[in-house]
Image (tube, rainbow, N blue to C red; front, side, top):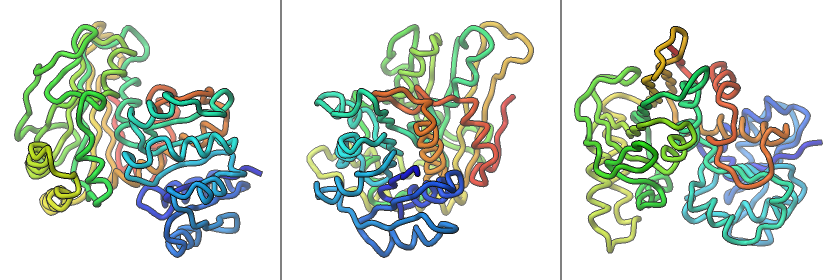
Length: 360
């Protein structure tokens, strides 16, 4: 019998992972871990039928973490903040003989796992960034590069209006520096082109509500995508419905000596202002300019969801299924590099958290 452990299973992402895996793996067992046993039990109560077990686990307690991972076939981590988790859960899962899937966990976490000896990587997979962004933002554009030569140019726009909690706010404040990406940069002819782009203010974009602001940020994921596809140019934008979040982040980053926690309330309030302006929604827009404009080649993909956190849970659950099915080779990977984009989009299209998909 397959046993799947979900850490942070009572949170916004983890609850969806638990719900989807319970539906997709009816013969398996779910182990739902969290700091608060009552919340973990509530997450288990949402599962139809038997097979979901709440477990109290503190990520900084080696014994509790080891006990949680022991006996699992795969451990899905939805706990954060990711800058504190890093590779801690991955190492515990691999040492216990389990595969690992992280709904967040970016370059820093993957590098930390690769930098030290991690027993189990020879025959187990450790999958990072198995969420919306990074994750789908680097996976779905690959659908625009099939059936012919790579596009000459690829534009990526991801964003909308979503609630940002304190943990996510800290992660957002710390996601800066060359290991994460470069603001205002583009990818051109095989290299990062600094200061190549400027913010797009008050523009209308397909799939977004009203006029929005698009801020260029060439993420590490976007650079990998451009290099893998061989495109001449890639432009990657984070989209906001107002200037509130960019302003809050800019103020925080200018205050270099302050701990990030000082600016968390401002980031949370900025997200609330965005929600008040448009209501909750999130859009992923990918547009390609093809060298060969042959009929039938897809040039645009739009995906919409009302809840980016919840849809990240769907992606993490899909990634866990692919790991269990043997579709992911052993070793350390990013989800966007190894998941199948067509299979993933097909599965997402039938999920209630996806309110629209256009591939044209």
